[in-house]
Length: 227
Image (cartoon, rainbow, N blue to C red; front, side, top):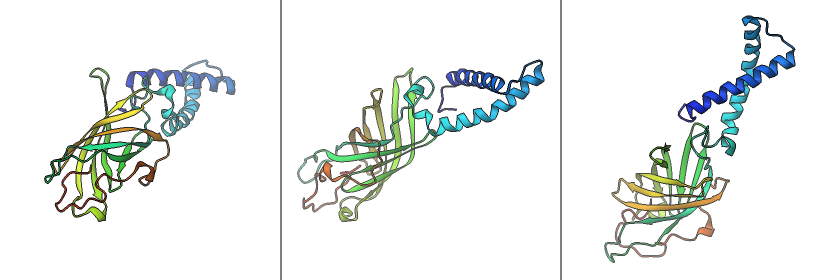
């Protein structure tokens, strides 16, 4: 039940059961004369609760009315856009490339979340993702591990790799994701994202521009330019 606040859920379930129980009794005209007559009404109430539960985990958990007090994690499904700032420096010039335009698409259900990040030159996909939430510690993050697959055109300077990213969830409703990443290529960087649309884009949008390394004649293998 980590996806619900246990105490709030217990009160909510009790109140919902009581409302449904009374509703069934009124609709059927049943009278409560002993424990068996009460159990019969309760038995008829269970299918209604099951239907309501299915509706909740499919749709209703996203509604703002349930956020925070019942559902501890925010609804952030959709496409987020922003930039990656790598800490990598070109060994030849000592320069760090400018911000890399990027998008992050998040697919979220009540029990699962997955992330795909894209730049003009790579796509990374999560294989483990979860929220880190602790109100006492003021912790509100989305973290995930991923595998990055650069485009074939940049294979000589950017190899496939794994990494981890931790993003601070900012705002209520959420308006910004900001955090850091580190990779198996011993590279790190900073990511800043803002909400773009609820639609999950399946390719890098051209309006974000080219990768900052496009058109440069690199003669060495670039390690860590991309997330």
